[in-house]
Image (cartoon, rainbow, N blue to C red):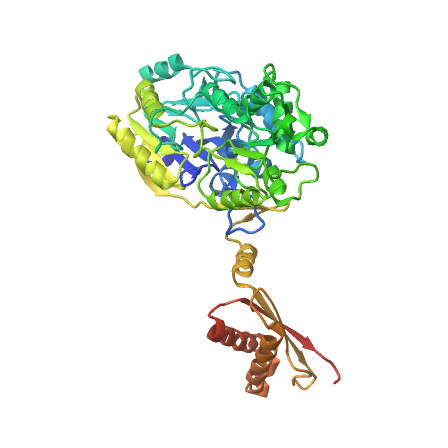
Length: 552
């Protein structure tokens, strides 16, 4: 049976990590993409702040890609569009808020006028080729989050997107339970479901309850209060503003992305409960007890406002002894080290820190175990396919689904090609997949040669050797050796020792071999490598330059 007569699911991102979502559905030789997001950079990728899935598999089939459907406006679901859309050239479908947010981001690109963005109403049903699609309203931490019902001639999939179950959401509507149950009554082949908080018992908390907790924390403070969260968490921005005003403080936005989300919220009509915010310029003229700073950088991002404040490099905002920093966000797996570093920098300034481990300062936008159980009860799929998590989340989610009497649960990873129908749901192949990194204004493979070289330089240091040869292929001077990040102490004496080792190795080389530049470089490199490893047990990056003097 050919694959064009099968209903397929293929995650290329988001099935081995939290973030970086890219999901593909295929039938009748046509493809649908759901979400195209980014994730944070890693310590092993120096200089890289944004990582995204490699779309090469679908890029090779882009003529059959009918469109990209965005479930909501968080970076891990739409942040890669501005980098990867030129490789896909497909129309984009989103509700009005998500579309407005995407347009704002694309305004910085040179293809903003070429991309076709179709606005779809909340709860709308529309068709793309063999896909009959329906947006179903859920609750999350940003306006207009959607689950997506994907109906085909071979069955229906419910793609939950990011969701939580909050009966008193501060932004947007409640979960459309009637629509979910209606789809469940029709019969759902598989549910592709959010796994972020599968280890959390009970229900995800309500944003309304969080307000009261933050109010209690802030009410008796006399210094500055800085609250950091994700810029796209509009509900949390509104909560922070409410707490500020209730405690006779001015809400201040610190970070360009916060102003962007505020502008999109006002453009889309979601500003009814939002006050006027002060800029960081205005806040500099207010006494500490009159400000509540709402800052970007909750995950320790180097360019985030909190990192610059902690380092003392922010031009207008500072924190000092007696001030309070509230981390109103979850620690995304993989960011522990950068967040810990940020915490320590703030503590060194005398700033008190409160995180979700210390008090109720954050409620998640993702489902805990009881929320997942309710979703499975409404939808009643035959197969559970956990995504939006690391492998440990996916395995735990599959076990939970089985305990809820879901007949089957498939554990997928990025690149796993799943046949949904006909026949039993099964992983039938693994396709090539990988990660791309944004390095300056370039998009490069994370395994590219120059990023590997950058990692080696970061971890091992570098040594450079310069050989100057005369016209007889003899050394015109003693080899020059310099290093960075290799020696702890007397670099000069170490360089002299290495130069002597290189000269001795050169002198042992037959004259006939000295015309071979490759062999010359290798002899010098091996002499340096052996000496350094023998003495220090390290392997720095070693480069050798040859200078040829003519007529001497």
